[in-house]
Image (cartoon, rainbow, N blue to C red):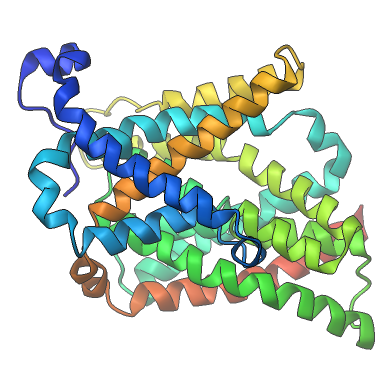
Length: 357
């Protein structure tokens, strides 16, 4: 089980006292992040929708299962800090990518589509995971969060709420990589087929909303929308941003549910409020009023990408392929059914809401 314990009390209270112990792990995750950011800027890699976050965890898993076991003793503290503290800070700063004004560009229909798609996908993941595949609830919830909200970032943000093991998080992120990458190619192909046969009344804009409300990662949404056309790309990105903004309320609701669910006990456990999620909303609100210079916001977004990528690299470093293999085929089958639901059920939700509104 992943742990964030520190062995000496002074280091817990005053983290700088343990700085020398943190440097090797932070340097390693930083180096992997630099490589991931560089690779993510290569045109053909970017066209595949493989952003810095996805590449960072893939590199982390590669190093974690080859060289890292030899370095683990000296790197552990820094890697743990990157995996947990930098993750929370990265989620908070993610709010600088969003503004509340973006919601108005898509309108009420886009919000309703996103809410329905998110809630049905997550609930379906929980039900299928437990009733059909017999998967533990943490893995099912992580896969559901990644599929229904914003891919790997949602999985990483949900992990501290669930207190899930690294292996479960890595399994969920791997499903985002597989099916999100598949979506990049599937959605433009479906759009062309629909244009030819006129099965459903999709315009570029409404198909973009469909893509943004159902594809896993932001980078994958951008890639798929770009392949269809500019109107589709713009609508897809806005719809996706609305989904991303739903991450914080989702985490608050999930935290409350988990707290209530220590059921059976006479005493109610206190609700664990994910403060990083509350601050995420506050930052998005701050960004909506354009109070900070655009140059500063760009630098903050760049720093945020590095923090999240370092957290991903740290997760990969602490993930062993043997643990992922132990998860078996069931998580992949669950993610497959969720992908089919997003394609078919998400399309039906889009058509129904667009028709009614």
